[in-house]
Length: 332
Ligand code: PEP
Ligand code: MN
Image (tube, rainbow, N blue to C red; front, side):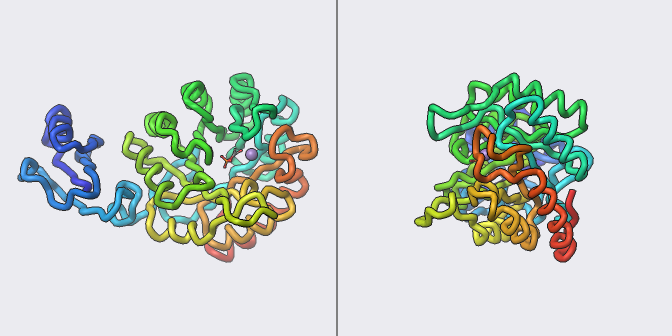
C-alpha cells in the first residue's frame, strides 16, 4: 500500500510512524510517501487524519506501477529527456568497454558527427570467464571524464559490484546496473542513492516482476530517475546469444511508469542482426536504444562479435530516423 501523508507532519514523526508500521518512508517537499508491503489493504488507524491519498496495490510493484502514477516518469538526460510525453528516443552508443584513449576518442568523434549525446562504455566488466578482459577500472573512468570535457558527451557506464560503486557514481552521468547485477541489493541501494539517472538492465533469467521489483528497490531509496532496459533473456534457443523479449517490453509499457530502452546488441550477440532489431524496437516506440559499436570490432576485448563497425552503425542510424518519424518519435 502507498500512502501520502501531509507535509505538516515532521520528518521525525513520519519516520516514527514508518517504523511502527514496518513501512518505508520517502519524504518529499509536497508530502511524505509511506510504502508498506502490498499485503496491507487498509489504511492503519494510527494514520487517521494525516492521509492525503492512499493506493491499495495488488503486488510489490508499487512505486513503478501505473496504478500509482499513471504517467511515465520524465528522466532528464543532460539538456533532453526520455519518458514524459514519450516523444524522444534516446540513442546510447559506444563500445562494450573502454580499451584505450585512441579507441574511445574515435568513438566520441563518430557520435559527435551524428549528434548523439550519450557515450556508453564499461570500465568494470562483469565477465563470465575469469580469464578475459575485465576493464580498465578507474583509468578507464578518467578517460571517459576526459572525453566528456573534450566532446561534450554524457557518460553511461556500469557498476559491477560494490567495491567501485562510489567511483562509478562520481564519474558517470548515467549509472548502469548490468544484467548480472540486477539482484545485487548493495548496488541497487547505491543506485537509489546516487542522484543520477540509472539504467537498470533486466537479468537474463529474471521475470518482468523481478525486474520491476528491482526498479522499486532503487526508487524506494529515493531515486525516481530509473530507466528499464530489456537486453534479451535466456530461452531454449542457442543460435542467438539471447532472445529479445518484445512481449515483455509491451507489458512494461502497459503496467510500469518508467521509460523503457532496448539493447539489441547483447540480445542478438552478432552484429548482423542488430540493425534489424534496432529498427523493430524503434517501430515499437521505445524510449531509447543502447547499441554497441567499436572502431575495430575484430579487435574488441569484449563482446567482439556483436559490436557494429562505425560504418555499420552510421548506416543503421540513418534508417532509424525514418522509422522513428513514422511512429511519432524523434531521435535524441
Ligand atoms: C554491457 O552493457 O556491456 C553489458 C555487460 O550488458 P549486460 O549487463 O546486459 O550483459
Ligand atoms: Mn557488452
